[in-house]
Image (cartoon, rainbow, N blue to C red; front, side, top):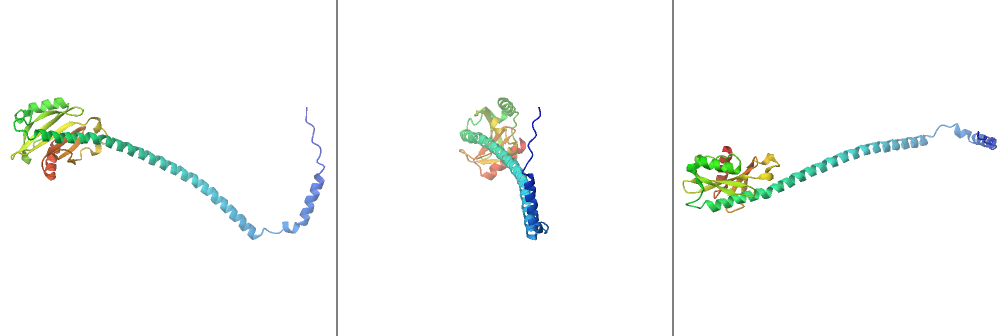
Length: 239
């Protein structure tokens, strides 16, 4: 069923008459050109709208760049924080290691009759024994060019596993000891800075220590810093 047609608009003739009257009343204005001031105002308005659209577009792009930069900065911060945590996790293990090396030197270096468990005359047996106990092939550095001869070595306990100590003696009786042991999980991160020498006075005697392939090495002795560093360099070159 079709809907009935709407009734005719009886007011349309009146509305048309009113429109024509208004046109006749303002015809001279309708025929005039647009005033320059109005054109300038319209141009200014159009320019402002274009700038607003442009700023909106650039604002969106800038927001995207800012978000991306923020995400990268946060990610870098998280990575740096992770690295810092790993570094701080290694620090106590390194302090414990170098302090133990210093204490071991202070305990055994003054000994006259029993400074070592296995003497230098049994060097091959000494190296094999300690290598087996530390689960790592060890090598005794030759410090004869620096004026030191091997006295011998011994097995020592560590915080996580066995450790080894090699003792060397100068002609005047001055002794230095090389302390070796696994650093365990603490040495896993940050391989780039492992071989850097570090000087420590944490303990009865000073020492230079470094970490290489998961193992710590500390050369301890009552020597001036430069002399101890020179010996540490000679040890490191041979190991």
